[in-house]
Image (tube, rainbow, N blue to C red; front, side, top):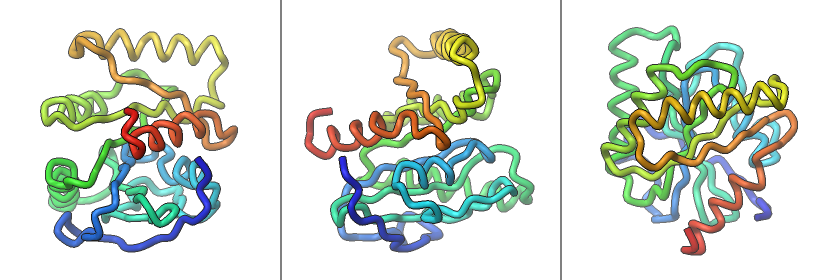
Amino acid sequence: MNLLRVKFICSSPSVDACPADGFPEFAFTGRSNVGKSSLINMLTSRRGIAKVSSTPGKTRLINHFLVNDTWYLVDLPGYGFAKISQSERLKIRKMTDGYLTNRKTMRCIFVLIDSRLEPQRNDLDFLSRLGENGIPFFILFTKIDKLSAVELQKSLARYKKRLSHSWEELPLIIPTSAKTKEGREIVLGIIEEILEGRL
């Protein structure tokens, strides 16, 4: 898939404020500091389309980017250890949950997980919530350029083993790197297949 045009459209404080044009949407989220902005910039081949920050938790709204005038890439707030108040954290979770459960144009969500870490409780809880609500998702293993091939395989095996405790059919895990662009064609291929009704 060629991304000929990528345009920032809006930042919305709630699902009701999101664009109403009906274009299909593909959302991205993950734990704070997982590398979401860098990955979105890599996928779109636009260096500054999503703002990269050294401070976790900068994304606080639902951000829509129109791609090729036909579908949206949606940048959702992260979850986890961002230095924000409990009330703000609950507000963001309510906004995100509202989007995930009520946004009829959302086709799937890509959940970013740091490939270097042991399975984290907040990631596992988030995946469970998606499963309980029947929301289709794919896992993107980020920052794999920081691991050797052997370390990556061990990490993948460890994560799949942990997921097998809760899932009869394991979700697809796609290794990615914002630095080397690994995984880009797979992610865009999945989006293309969904848009064409083949997946």
